[in-house]
Image 1 (cartoon, rainbow, N blue to C red):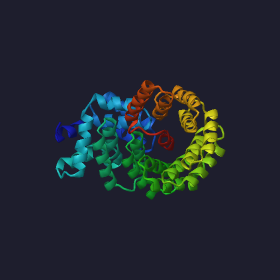
Image 2: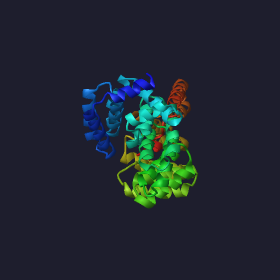
Image 3: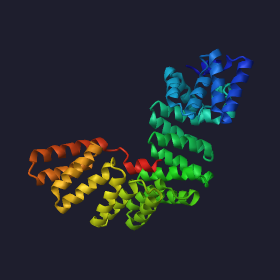
Image 4: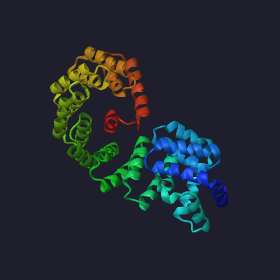
Length: 363
């Protein structure tokens, strides 16, 4: 497709169709995505080959949370991706006089997001991750202070588990809008997943100041302090989380982990037992209880506890390591080897997968 054919596509609208299309864009800019979607579909009903309306429609669907429909819209016609590349090349570098005609025909000056944010979302939805990140960084240099744009794209990158560009986006949001607690939380969560402990703490502490305490935030912040390591600070945060969420096993599990790090096995055992009583389906407290029982020499009890952990989650790979030690002590060499093989298989499978603590931090 040439520049000329793109311009011709834009020029096929009648004055009435163009007015209707621009009204849909106005609704889009006002965040009335349902109204905008109806307008784009009306345009496409009359002009099914009009690519800008198709691209706007995909964006409206995306922003309404209808991601599968947005992807379907984009996957049916590959020209959209070409159009995105053309727009990026044209408005980024080209001095071709046709660029001005394209800009006039496509009302980009009234919706900057088409030339910027939509391109990254389209590339992201089609799996072209490196291009999406590169396009976002180009956007950031063009308009670093558009908090809405960076907030939207930061959320999209975080959902795609692309945490480096997500962090970049939310860093720009909080510079422009320092009172945005949600973006500070996203920034802290992204840094946590990237194991950037000090920036994660700074951001999550900012959330505490802006939005107050909640159990999930305290757990995320405590986990970050635990990794520094600052175990006493982590324990304080976990205990505050336990008071806020008395029916949750997760804070007691984290207390047990921290106490175990300090070598306080008796206190850790009590915390893991409490966690397991509150949430019997959570495998981690059972796994650590089994480890403590094994250290204490209660081999048969450790075996039953570890089997319970694996009944709760057959892919909880850490339990297989301790199970292998149990079988070895009981003289079951074949069972010990099988448990170690399973441990290594699942460990490889889980490599790069977010831990439960990291998943919780993103909520």
